[in-house]
Image 1 (spheres, rainbow, N blue to C red):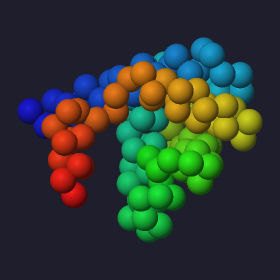
Image 2 (image 1 turned 30 degrees about the vertical axis):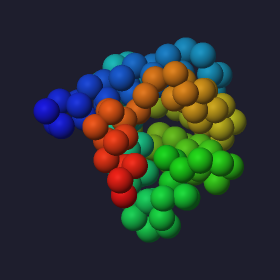
Image 3 (image 1 turned 135 degrees about the vertical axis):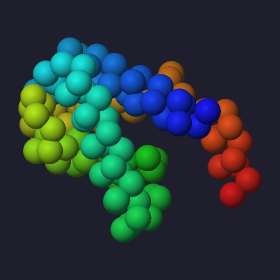
Length: 119
């Protein structure tokens, strides 16, 4: 069941990235498969940054540092994923829009949220 939750989360993330591509100037994603691969790369880069610098510096962290880390990860990911073009301004705007969308679409399942409370 946990695997299916991850698959659904990546599909939702890809859809969000495609929406952001339509909303944000200087941020374009070629299609669904590029958006899905971009979501995977962003998650992997976030995981690597968390392993090196800790949770507060990751794209999943809150505050200005997490926001800037999100923008940097989005900008770096364009060099890994094909059919994605992002400028620095586009990455900052995309991080802002993704953060706003994140307020309305939960990024973790209730099981994971409950598990994090007990850590």
